[in-house]
Length: 590
Image 1: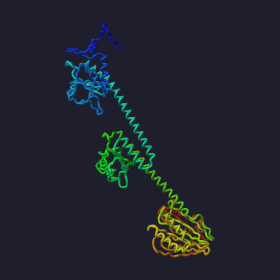
Image 2: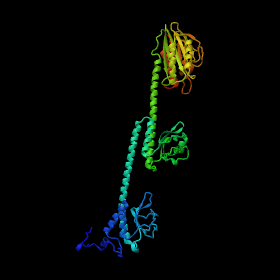
Image 3: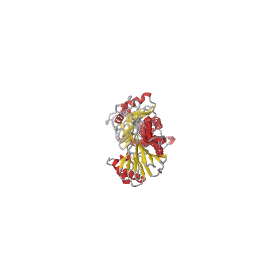
Image 4: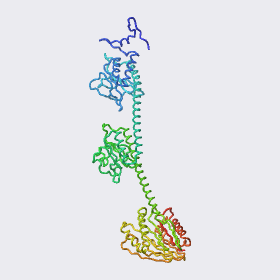
């Protein structure tokens, strides 16, 4: 930069136009006809750039421009977020001047004079766009120059260079502001993610649904700074209030039918203002609870509930970032509630499995631990439940003096209820066997079941007492599948004598049957799981196939006959397990 020369006595030797700028203009003295030199231009440019970038020096900037161009009126308009040019700094504007500049903003690099556009309301005759790449950031407006002098080519060139310098300063400030906003946004996002991470951790550690609901509501109220929040979940009768904070006592409302909820939120993937919901039960429910924002809790395209948030205490609307957080909260709430339900189902299944294991062990303990040793006879038996536990049973009870009670029974139904009833029958028969005749034992058991079971529960049972010395079997059949007696020559007969199933009719009497057993004879006691076993085509195994199977196996031992019959039935059903409990007891005379 050129050094300023100083003459004798400290008198400045600067050019005349600089000296004129340095001293005050005298009254009546003509103003300079053109802008000052480079130093003054740098001063104006710096001041104008500062004023456009911030507000602390805008008055100084306008004064500098006005002094250089000898005008009493000037203004700076800055583009706002909505694209309009908003008045940010002004000097000498007429009263009632608008706060925005009307009309389309001029393109960067163009200087518009009074003949280009009318700006009478601001009293401006010249507009200077400030921007880059045809993107105006701001507009500098100037009024008439003093002395009725117009803006000539030199003034316009000066303003163009000033606008170019100011655009660079303004753009730098815009970039700094944008970076600052981006940093604030990132900091806010990091804070939100941190909160969501903490929430996710807390939800993972929570196993109770009540605790999860409370945590979701507390987080939503704290983040959005609202006074009320609610969680509605789909139940058997529709959408109902599952948990709420800050609600009126009557805000629970009537359940909203599931189909109404699906229709109201169809196509809604994220947060939605309650006021934008279609008229219907869901909107009325949320309006009664004074909610402002609703977020669907959806799983597999089906709405399982909604998270509703009341209006903000500040009155500010929910931003896009708020809606994103609300959506994230809804997803976490849905995942946590689903996990809690699955955990509850898993725990319930584990509990049932433990109970079934205990029931299975109890049922196994009811079966005889080993085959009986009885002179002249072989006994073998097997029972296969279709579930973990079953309602079939077999037993042999030593009665002393080469006598043995043989029992097979079948409780109506399957599973645990049937096994519990069978345990009672087993205990009763064990207690009464041998104390009276077979008919008396079953009549007492019938009265016992009538007094202690439901009408739909009954038991079919075959009870026989074998006298090995006399080779005689005395029996009573209470509605059970009649056992098969296959003699050595292949003749088949059935053991029918007895009466109806136990637990159906009061005052029932039972007839007693008796059959002799010669060497080689086989008696097979089965439940209906054998005779009614179905093939893949839906055909029952039936009595004829049972007879044929026993006749073909009768030459073997009792164990061989048992294994062969069970295998034949399994091959017929073509399944690893049976559709009904299956029990077989084989008695063979040696």
